[in-house]
Image (cartoon, one colour):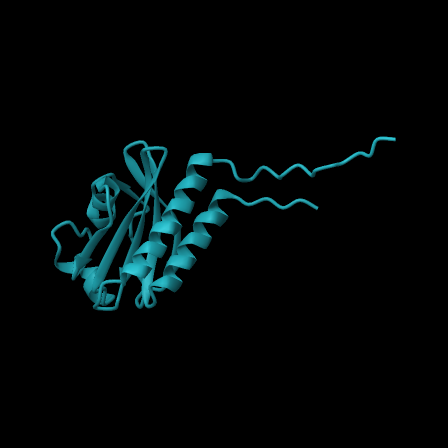
Length: 161
């Protein structure tokens, strides 16, 4: 029996894990493709139905895009008031109080962004930020490897007589 793990599976698991680390949040994973960030995974909930939300951003666009240009974690308290926010009305209506953007980097290249929108007023603890960093490292590694869908070949041992 062989099992395969697709890139989408890895990114979905990473977004779910991040949502568990930061309760009452929405987590989006954006993957860089040329000069664009493409939404590839999400976890958490929205309190209200929204339509017309983007699934692609230019690198540098919005809070997630700004985090994509950063070399370190981007923390924004009251992100709805930040001039980089693309949809401040959504952030206000959803009660988002803190934004955490963690760049995904592998092999000295940025490959995406983990964006966490939290309804809690406090910034995440240093331990939570460290754990988010571990998640982004794993997601970035998966992105750099690319094809995780290859099944592992079984190891067969033959006995010599």
